[in-house]
Length: 425
Image (cartoon, rainbow, N blue to C red; front, top):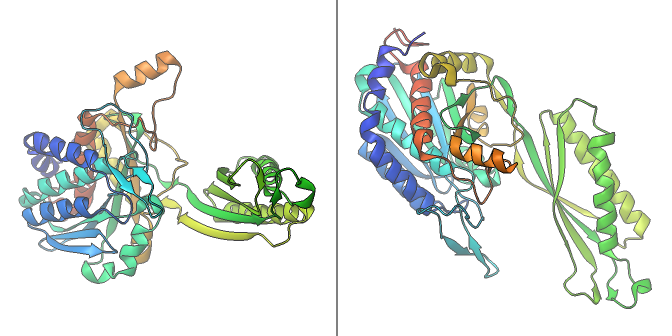
């Protein structure tokens, strides 16, 4: 197979966008914004879409932006990029590294970094949108470019849906998305079926009886209670989940006390669950509640524990037909650079959009690791810095080129007019 002529026509202009796109990426990387506060990024995205002739709707779901480019009759393809950064202090040493710091509700200084690669996603979609807008003779139909806020909280996709997204755009025939991952730059990894895990975070508050640190006999010590719960939870995946089923139960945060000689009256745990099956997730939740209540009873806790679910993510379950279509198009263009990355343990809220719209979707990964960085890490016996690491730094080349071409190639699998994969005839 070879790249269809229409796809080649669109991508012929890609080298001419390189300097502009790389400058855009560096600017986005240097100016990250936290979830629901992506004001500057959204303004840039909206301005670029307007410059390329898109009908633009901004402020969707808070800071979300949607662009619609109509180019005659034909399929409707939605492509999504997320925009938010993370509360991480960047340690990459790049000359365009983020130095952004924001103040939280408690007055604390919080550093911000694009530690997950959403700046890559925005730059790639912006580049693909510009390429497609500049070569309308090579395709027919409608392109919907969606820039989503608050993915890192698992809220942004649903917020855009709840804010009337369906009324702003024609119903898509397919929804597409991608994520830069810690794989070799230049590679691309589609995967049919479950690709990204579903996730749920649970905040648990347990109660003790406060006392002086020198008088533990007068207390119900929440530190001991929390420790007992954490240890007991380690047996859930190992001893309760069927071997072969994927499950993760992580205690990400424990908070007890404020001073060495004070026994507090409560403790807080933040847990994170991952699974590829809703039944497994429910099994984990049930086990957690059973263990927490039992340990509270064993410790003589004066109040029942409280459970608060937050930051939930759906399963990303790629449509088989859409994934096959995109994979064939990728192989025709990228050849041996295409390989199945397999299931990923991370999570995404992208699928809330196509699920709400009732349309098929596929979401793929593409690599961002410079081969030199990979070699250095291997020589040191260290893993390559992954997403959410303060050292996460995708190689600009060829990552941007690959991610941009991937959006174009995938979109033209529906919109192409030259006999390419799924083209309009």
